[in-house]
Image (cartoon, rainbow, N blue to C red):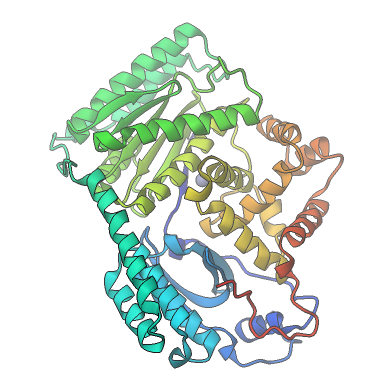
Length: 502
Ligand SMILES: [Zn+2]
């Protein structure tokens, strides 16, 4: 059975889950939720809802979501929507909506928009300017200057830096060829193409799902892939080129100057995973090489998804297709724009999906429980891309809420099926905790899962008899250790339910 694993779907459409359980102490932080989640916190002291604010967020990947803010940092914010927490990095939101939320939070903390300081306005201006919203920035800078004329100098410096950065990036993009044409081949004759390719693949692999195919088998599969790539070029258009790296066949319509990045991300991810699982550097986890399709046009992405995978992934920006029967896996990705944030987001999705592809091929082609799979894919994205990926910070920020409010994670840990996108950062945090106690143990854990063991069995076998309750307790302790802010002061003196590291 083909298995589709999608990533970065519209958060607004992700299925929700309920928060259960009550906080241990009726403190100010808990009381925030008493006002927002009255059913769960009946025994808490009633507080007015003005202790936090509602924000409307628009996501860069499409869709929108409103909710009450429970925490925010320089990195992003957590909102509760329908009793479900969602974490977003500021860069995952459309700039106007991120700016409006940031400004509303600042005003709320100061006790009114007219009480914002010159520094508040200046910082808001910087936030907008860094994201190319000169209109919003100008407003804020004007207000900062009005409150304190001394800001004139730092504002000038901010504009100078902005211009320098723009000049540098213009120099990089001015020679781009804008190729928006999508192949106009009549696609009627392509009906069933994916099926035919699958049948050819089956013949080439002789249905051998063994992780190490023979050299002969590899060569045949490579041939099938390249024939497939030619058909993709016919259907999608001549702008599609093939880049071959050590472990990947990358078909793309990207501008020539950016293509090296694709190879860099793919191979760095491969190396990170090979090292994690102590695999032979000379070996190759894939059937031949892993086909990766990287699009810069939504029309092409959708066309590919529809024609070759029979997938109407309208709200996705990437997916991995794995076929258990013959061990095939390929990855399909969309870059949404040309800004550095677009490239970063693309890279995160690439490493996330690429990790699924690798894990699909590792040891056996059995699918592992989704929370482990998604959490690990996000963890690898963070490891490989570091500051260019928001996954690590998102995981920390969301984990902080689950620990601070004692929200349960039992449902996540006991399930094996698909999890909603808003739980990925939570899964990431738990998987990072497991992986943090030794990469050999973690590799053993994954190996047992791939052999068909349940999570409790694999956990017990590789972590000295650890059960799921102990895993949860250990994880909570670890989150508290690295983030003391999760324990609010006992005197309830904190005016807000979040730390204001602005
Ligand atoms: Zn995923």
